[in-house]
Image (cartoon, rainbow, N blue to C red):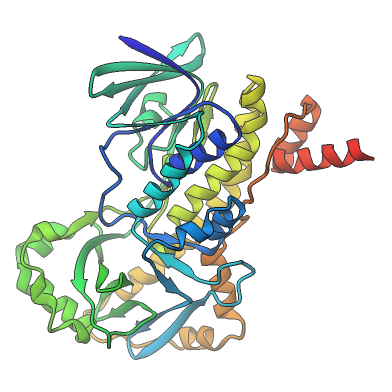
Length: 434
């Protein structure tokens, strides 16, 4: 079996994996990213680039180039709940350089970022390379076993980072324990054409015991019909005509276009999961993004959280990787840094699912509860929701880490209080200057 050597092997070429690869290579660390497909083109992936992610792209000097790619800008979102137009979030007042969510195909984002990463000599992206397992040296993860176009391959690395999604092969190989949170819904994704007179900022329609997500993609909607978990086969048994009628009932302005759905192959079932690892790391291994915590599509925050994970991991790991001393204590700090925002976001998602599930209990028109009308009238609520969705809990910032020796006592202090190594480095630089 052929064996390669790298400093950090990242398994999975999604937003977390490519961003981490870019940041480490930018710091001069040899990094190899494995992606099992031959390209990034896959439909119905997370296509929302949030203000905090756009801030990161600005910090890297990549924002202007990114925004030259075709995209739509969403400055606010609302939902039609029964006969109430509920303004869900407003991004125009968030403390960010870009006060909008950019809607762009994820493959465009990944192609853009990976092409910029390839300009660094220490970056290597291997397409059609699937991470299939791990190998160990004593009690430490020593690298990745992979399947390549030329056969099986071993990639030895100081650190393996699993970014291979909610069904992570690497996570399974490491036998890390997953905590599941019950989700009562699944989503049927499909495309349907969009007309100029369609509502601009309406994200969802909820009525008649059903919910429909509509994401404006220019000349079409990326649509998601929210269904009760495990009912897809029942829906198929009723036939496409019944499905079309359901869509037209929720969003009457789509009635003249539902005939575009001609085959069940045009729909993709997303089995919604919300879970997270109890422990994100082993000696020589770290999990981030969906491999560490699967998110619901609620709020479209999954891609944002994954990229924030990657930035935090790069800030914390750059110095230790340069020094060749990535201890379990350092890996623990990544989890401590990112577990709090993960917990808060998942708490909000799980409770949003419960509220949505209550709307599924009747097939008739929804009677909007007075509590929702009161919430709709609260001052500042749209800005708060805009911040929670667009910026998120504990947004990360790129730290240009220098090789500063961090005493073990400070490392332990950072783990205890969830501080970042980047913050400690800034403090260390300040003290040295004094």
